[in-house]
Length: 226
Length: 261
Image 1 (tube, chains in turn blue, yellow):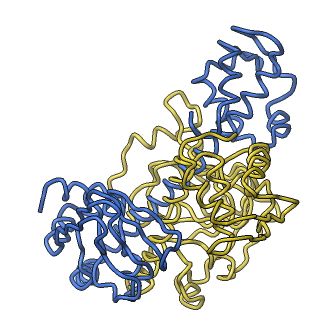
Image 2: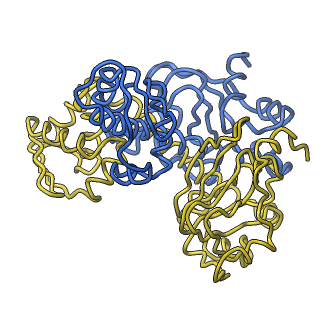
């Protein structure tokens, strides 16, 4: 198997907690597969005999003809939920770009898991850590809008000033958090985020803004393309 | 177990509340049995039959913790995971100079620290109650023994986690890649019937909540909904009428990185 392909399996969060030995065994009974543009990895309703780790390209999952689908990219898995269910695929997977993938066959995979409970635990750990990481990332992305709300409020407090400014917060931070409709922790994190935009917290809740105009621009920029 | 000494130093300020202190610390502390129904919707238990879940948790109790109770500290062995039923818990690391860096604020109902528990490793962060909380502490040993005896339960958990991973990954991509205009139209389209022509839908959530799910400010959501009028999407209260679903779908496909907020 190609070294690049092996690298993708090793980096996939799902397999990240597997021991080197178990990863090597998994790769031993897996196969490298190539799919041309439009090729079908599996069809909805077929028994789930393999799942795939996508090494390159792009795979579309659709529940039915012309339905809204999900798009998978390198590092993602396809069909593993159906394999764990030991049922049939619930979606159809097609190559939206030419795809290189590793096919992990269900039979040897289950034998591996039955023989070594460590593998089950490592997969559970990898999958839960992945989930936690994504929940954090989603929170992080949404926090961007919190930081903008705070920036907007501070720019308002600076009045018509331009350039560098010193702002004294008119109320305590928890009151400010309430006013801005945030949790106090979100406010602290928003302040931390604004450090990158030239806002530093001095003594007695005094704020130093390096450039009020820049802060105003940041506050007005769109939601997520910072 | 090889727990890094470094982690121990990260969390030197407080000692974790042990089992004995836990109840004494809380005023009017009560323990009650956990109703599996309360946690059956958690990603890891989603596919699990209720009776199997009850067996696996083996009469786990719900305990009340006061604010500031320390649940665990970074570097200590992960011998349990937690389920938060009410209140709030923060997960944080302490930096070298003793400042807290909050990794996450856990909101109910959610499980946490299960990854560390499955890995039989150490907790990577500290956990402290910030708002009086009802928690279930699930001990690793009987839980993992139960899974070892009944692998099907473990496979069911893996299937559920796989689907959740996929859905959240999609949500992250949507947040990262799409303009507010496209995010809102995709959301409306996801509620609309397939096909073409006119459609009237009811928003299933309050606008505040929709805005937060889509990662935007309520004001931005209102602005985008206003702008969608040009494209034949009219919103009144929670009722949205779409003149032509196919047209909205085309707009959604065309809206790449353009910004509408």
